[in-house]
Image (cartoon, rainbow, N blue to C red):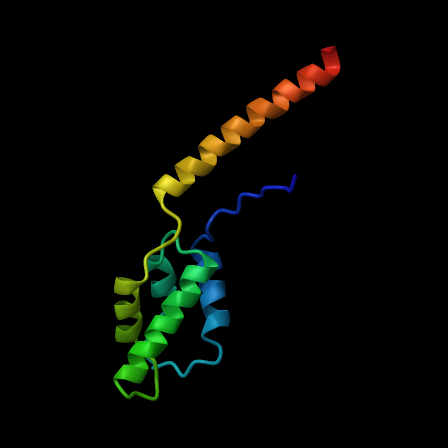
Amino acid sequence: MGLLFYVAPPDETGRLAILKILVSHMPLSPDVDLTSIAKSAVNFTGADLESLCREAGLSAIRRKSETVSAADFAQGLEHVKPGFSKEVEDWYAELDKKLRSQVVKLQKQSLYG
């Protein structure tokens, strides 16, 4: 049996750090505010942020622009939704609860049986 790890989506600081890495080779317009984008991308995972940057880049290409603008990121935010939702969080919480109860049962069994 493998190990299961829960990894919460990054907070705003983490999202900003990820965005900086993802756009490091993208030609950005001066109007792009990564801090603002990080604030807007609540519950985005690293993969979601990568999709967002890709979508913004494609938007710029469709406009035949040499730079990716804030409007391109805004359009990306309309199309890319976070993969981590309240339902997913609740599912992980329920799974954690079930697994913990099984661990307690196994511990009692090995201690007393």
